[in-house]
Length: 299
Image (tube, rainbow, N blue to C red; front, top):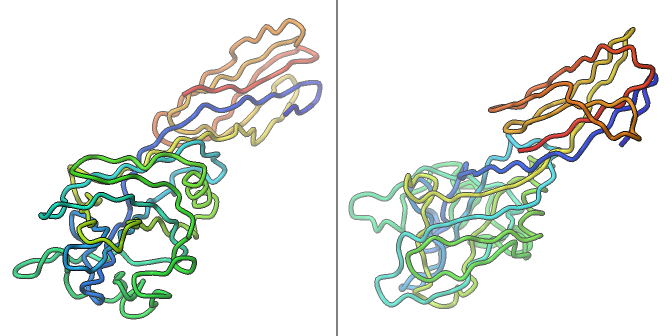
């Protein structure tokens, strides 16, 4: 993009990539064995079918509010750690991530005493259960949530899950599109459903570390760029001022030259934002009849 302004020229260059790693803002399990119960406060999330037959489905949602809404995503991958497998010989299976199409409540229940840990405890209002997105109302379109109505039929990414290990759901165009959509439209960020693709088979259930697990929390790695944007460019007398919003973790350089034919760019100012986004104003005092400016950045 080139902007002509009072005998001066202004250029912008591509921004460098920014990488962030996030843990869930909320995660929980839909448990068929106790359809009115909730176990979202536990240090794990269950998905798959147990040896007794009931199914489990996991839910994960990440807070993306710190990513600029004009960010362009290039990479998104989710890492989950299996912390327990069935006591009997487990059945290995593929698990997939499906974008949720409606809101749900996490809950804070943890099974104690004689209750089997996978059953959770009776849900209080607003917590997700096998029957409801927000107990005791807001029922799913079908128990456990329904494909096409409560969660997308498109699988954003998948991974073959076997024993105790760390598994990465690789970045795909579909997974990137999910996160990009949530960045652009935060009100539609309902997270993912973790679904076992072989729910008909018993012993496919796996316990995954949740956000409450200090040693094995899920991790979403995102890489994105933010298009450089000059918010204001103004010339008063012999002073030219340009303003821009600098993103955290980036080094910016404002450069100038008096003739494009020489391609001799000189630094005018350096800007570094270590922790948060900040707006900067850079001023150049020059009597040159014509001057070119550009803004470049690197991670």
